[in-house]
Image (cartoon, rainbow, N blue to C red; front, side):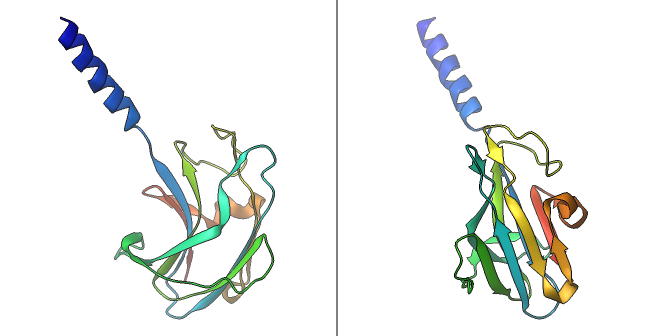
Length: 152
């Protein structure tokens, strides 16, 4: 009986520890040419920021998802601390933030674990797009756990 309890506890522990997920915020370029992309993050106060200047870039899959096996090296040409400026090649996705163990629904939702929506702006001059938090949900769409803005 004691063994059964130990095995049941181990099974329960392993099931609960594997209940973690990520949602990614990304900008994908499908325009056919390189595009200049800038984004600025703000302070997160006492919470944990969702967006970061420590971006990552990857080649896209056939459905414009993230191809985790094909990272792309991009350089931030902006020297300020809170702004990123990159030239985003075609068929590349730029991951600018992530949300752990929560589902994103809108920018001003109450996030768990003290997460803070700290994105101040996204600028894509080719589309004459200036995205701020209040307009974020008009441009970024959720698809398979990735909240993306597609540059066409």
